[in-house]
Length: 459
Image (cartoon, rainbow, N blue to C red; front, side):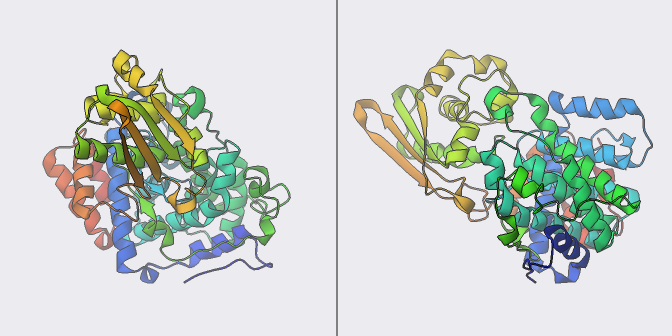
């Protein structure tokens, strides 16, 4: 099923009709399986994220409000109002930089969709088929809007996860709250008033970035609930004269654009991270690792490393050389490549090691790394890279990667994904519970009440 914009339809109306109309029966077996993998990956990210100090700030904030007990926060078992639980889950889900990302859309859909579906699913006792349908819908809205908006958003310094994310969360919430298309159109209009978030954190730091997803998730639920109560929003929120596309994405003629939606393109273009960094670093780390394995050189052999990247990506991860906090370490490609050579790993613990940020060997190597833009690396391939390493006596080693491991063109196997989940979930759950979570997700379409899954995620 494909839908294309007509001059008589606003984007918000088109999105609303798609969200309300999609059925579980419209989804192929492959799409359903991909959705399950995305859910499992996000649950692992939430569990490891729940243990990290910067994410615990969001948890403690909501816990201390002591609101109505409706939905569960993973690991802790604390029950809070649904939108507050989703806020914390979204913060956990993106707060380790291990969550998935869409190819060429600028959104991390899992951390937006799964928290909404878990929190509302538990409160409203939603079954597995509707849960999975909501997840696929969220990824599809991300795919459609991301293609229209993410380049312009990034160029102007807005965080696509924050701006696109509010509409993704609203779509999932609207579906699970059973809004009709008119109500959901208004919900998207309301959501536009919540759009916020810049990427200045990748220049000068700020752990507040961890909360961007949580903010979008909570406000998405609130936008849908407010619309269900009768609040209205502008139906031209995307393409209007003061709409999101013009103001945030710098699009001068959005009315000429076409919004494409299907019943699975979003989830089928999903990418899974191997390393706890922004998506832009996955391919360069892969490339360096493969060259190390092939040529067996060490940090002392390196005279210079040149990395070619998409122009926006180069700014996104190439601005920090000497991190002062964890978020800066995770968004510093120079640091990531340096520790790969020196430590042979990119484990999360190395990004949290304050002494390593100031290690003389790491800093010396980091300052031998240079980034340059490659115009032809763009769109779905924007996370590809070209890497050239100059070693002793001027010898050069080169690697070109169009797609990093874990991307939709070079995916992790199901067993590799399970292994990632086991490693992340082990920070909270015992081994037998971990296997039970895996089995529950893999038979999710048979689940009558998503609370069955939620109960397994509490320590």
